[in-house]
Image (cartoon, rainbow, N blue to C red):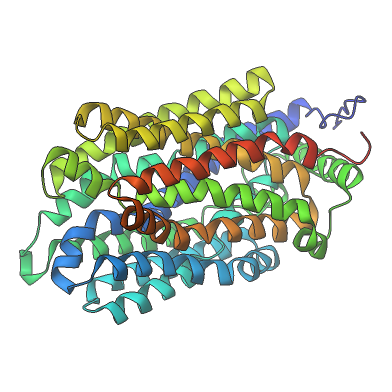
Length: 441
């Protein structure tokens, strides 16, 4: 087994055995990671589908809905770093399965909510249960896939968000239309069914994932050793280039905080759109949220799937991840702003939403290559969690930020406010060329 090193200072070049191992890993691991992310995103986004019916049944005000939607992120962020440290301690297979099983059960318990107080309690418990999933999955992928594959792998993983709407949107709409069946509201059916499905997937993941190449029974010894050597060589290169390798360094490095702020700005747009998207589409169509709205809401997410294929591929082919990420963010900002300006023209407004959703989904796999290339070892487990923790806070800020803009400046102003923060995120991504410059350059 050999590992070729590019003497120009680039990442290690994988041997044929390592390439075969990485190919097998994509086949054996990515489908399960994708399925997990589909349910993770659906268990967040289904609140947007239930919004109108849920508020009508429980009497929740707009302010209470915005607070409850956002408080999930505070709870999530508070447990994020400890959760990722525990994942590093117990292994991804056990910890990711634990997260899925518990968050599925808690999500199903949303069917029992009947007041603002119970809504807040379940949302806090859901945040605690799900904390650590996303950075844990990203960290897990850094242990399996070399840097030259990471944008493509992250792009495939990010299919989970749009797929959760392409398939989950119609499912959520269908379950909402089951209102009155066996004495349950449609939104109760939706939370129960989708939550329990997540727990079932968690049980399956417990027996399908492998924590590292060394523990994968479907790799030969040569393939396992070769891939492990490539990953280890990249870890050494990151430590030499940036000096950020231990757990404490990952938490205290100001550049990690900078990356976290970029992700926060991305997630402001994501959360500000997602929690209101079905209701916004319903207004464009002049219909209540149900199966038809669910099907139409799937259109922007179908566009996001295409973007997740095309955008990372363009970035890899050109070698310009930073520039492509900036352009994608600017397109997203234009789309989300135009979706407000074009509201009197439903088809045009829907097209603008397609650009916005495709943009904020496709930019994220590119973004995560920046911290993954910068952090190694224990710093990766802690630093990736810190970046995601800062981003998760946007889930609390965004609904209230959008509501504040709408109340202060008039209906539709919230979408312009989201566009403004997205432009700021694009500027900060451009500046990573300076911020993340290696010590040796």
